[in-house]
Image (cartoon, rainbow, N blue to C red):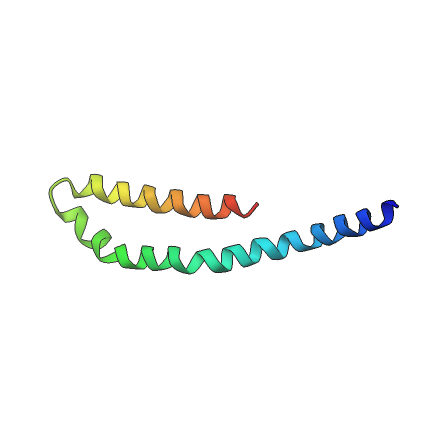
Length: 74
């Protein structure tokens, strides 16, 4: 009876984009909150000693988090 298997596979294929959208919708707000919380630091750090290095580190961290979020939903 291959018919139920084909129907289940079709249902999973249709549910995958919805799953991705739900994951992004759930994980994006905490990521945005973290980015917004670090905006004051990103505005002040370049003017402090070794601030450019710390600013670049924060930006790399945020970029890696965004990439992980988007790659994890594929």
